[in-house]
Image 1 (cartoon, one colour):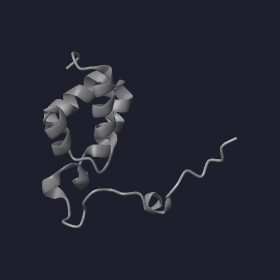
Image 2: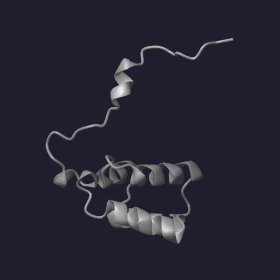
Image 3: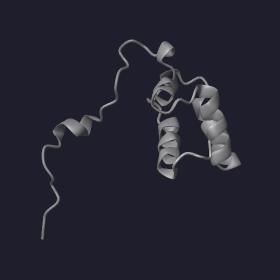
Image 4: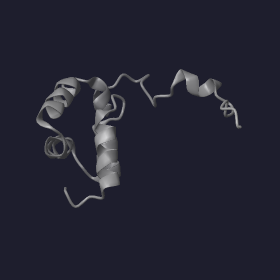
Length: 91
């Protein structure tokens, strides 16, 4: 898995850390099954970071589509709705 572009590697790590991104989405996008994602994370992270990630992911129902509650769909931040234009002043 070291043959992947660094940007793709970063995206896989980011998706794996996200609570609401299921392993099935990673598999669909990158072809990595859950066991492959675990192996990928093990080789691309420091030992302590990997252990912290595994502890966090273990038993998390949002990481598996079959275990999710039916009302859990896509995550959308509540602030996302209220932002309609760029509020940064231009000087």
